[in-house]
Image 1 (spheres, rainbow, N blue to C red):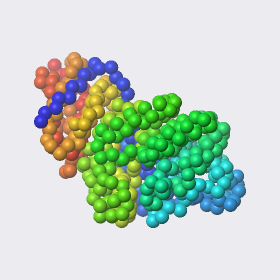
Image 2: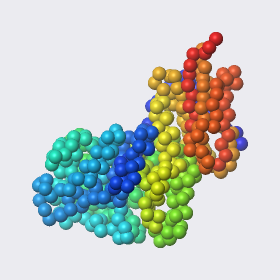
Image 3: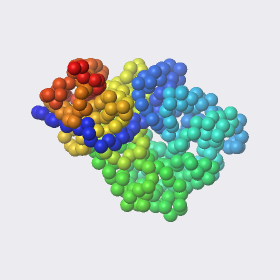
Image 4: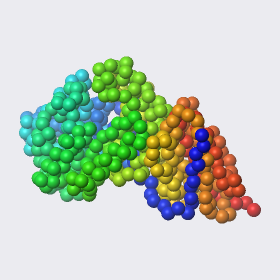
Length: 457
C-alpha cells in the first residue's frame, strides 16, 4: 500500500498546539529514582498533580497537607507542606506549569478519603490556604503563580455505577456540587485571575449535564471543564473531543476551556482490569508497547484538529507495583527506563521546535496521521508520522514550493519495536524528484528533520 503526503511550504501557517502535558512525573521519586533528566528533552507544558501522592509520599492531597481536620485551618502550624514543596519545586525548576488537583489520589486496596468533608466550608478554607502558600507566600511559601485549580477528580464514579476500587467520591452528585460551589467561589473571590474548574469527568454525561446546570443556575465560577478519555482507537479520542465541544456549547458553556486531563491508550475493559491481574498485565504491556506509542503519536496529532486547550497524558510516572493494575500506565518501566511512549513525546517536542504548522492530516479511521512544522526562521522543517497499523505502507513525502536556491538535507528517525528514534536514513533532498519515500511496517512512528542551506553553485 502507498500513501502520498503533500507538504506545501507556502501554506498559511497556524501554530502547533502544545498538547504534551502529563500527570505526575518529573522529579526524583521518593529518593529512589531521579527521572527528571529525561524531561529535559521534552516540551512538557502542564503537569497535573493527580495521583502524585502514590509516588511522592505525603504530597498534594488535602489529607496529606492538612492531616488533622479538627484543627484550625488558618494556622500555618497545622499544615505539612514539606514534601509537596520539594515535589512542586522540582517541577517548577524544569519550567513546567502546574494543574493542581484539590482532593485525593487513588487509594488501594480500598479508598479511604472519598467521603464528602464533614465541614465543606472548612475544607474550602484549607484549599484556599494551599493556594495562598504556593501563590502568595503564605506560611513560608512561594509565588509560583499556579493558574489552574481543579476541584476533585471523577466524582461521577461512585458505588451506584462501578466497583468500589474505582471510587473517588462516595457522596451524592448534589454533595459534590455543594463542595464545588463553595470552594470555587472562595478561591475566585481571593484571586479573580485563578482559573477554577472540574469535575475531572470519567464518563457520566448525565452527571456532567447536572454539574453545568448547577454552575449556570448558581452562577458558580467555571473556567475550565475537565474530562478523561481512555480509548482503543485514535479516532475515538478525536470523536470524544467533538462530543465534549458540542456538549459544552449546548449547555451554554462554549466559552470555558476544555481540558482532557487524563488520556491514554486502553485496549481493554475496566472491570477485568480490577479483578484479574493477569489480564491487567497483558493490557498494560500493550499500552507500553509500540502499539500504545503509535496511538499516543496519533492522539497528539489529532488533538491539533480540536478545540482542546490543555491535555495531560496519564501518566509521566514510573510503573509501580506490578500487582496493582493502574500502576502500569506510565512513561517509564519499573526500573526507570523510558518506554516507547516516552520517545513519542520526545519526537513531539521536536515538532514544537518548528511551530509553524504547514501540514496536517484530517482525522479518519485509516489509522495513520501526520503533521509538518516550519521553524520561525524558515530554515528547518520537521515532519511527524504515526502508523497505528500492523501492515506495511510506503509513505511518499511530496514537498512543494520549496524556496529557491536552497539545498534541503534530511534525517529520518524511526521508533518501532527495535528502534528508539534512531537515525535510519540521511541525505540531501533532490528537488527534481520532489519526493521522499519512507516505508513503515507495523506499529511505528517516524520523525523527519529537514534543514535548509544555501545551494552551492
